[in-house]
Length: 77
Image (cartoon, rainbow, N blue to C red):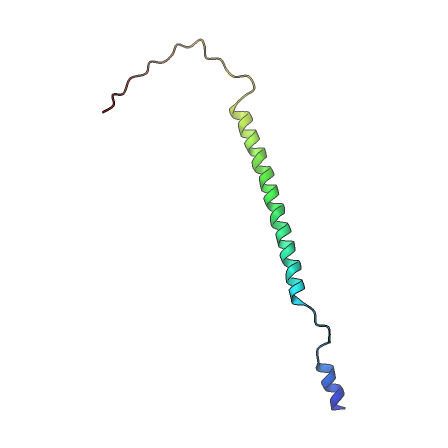
């Protein structure tokens, strides 16, 4: 009878591999980080495109009517 009690406390012959669980977690975290990086890149591209559209309108303003401003010469040593 004591032999049966000892066998009940022994671990199963096929242990659960913690390395496999760690690999699954690492792959999930890597996929999440890649997704976040791609999302950030898309947001950066959109904000850059919006800034360029605001800074440089499609039809540039003409300044041909204004006279050139006088520029003072700075003497060099």
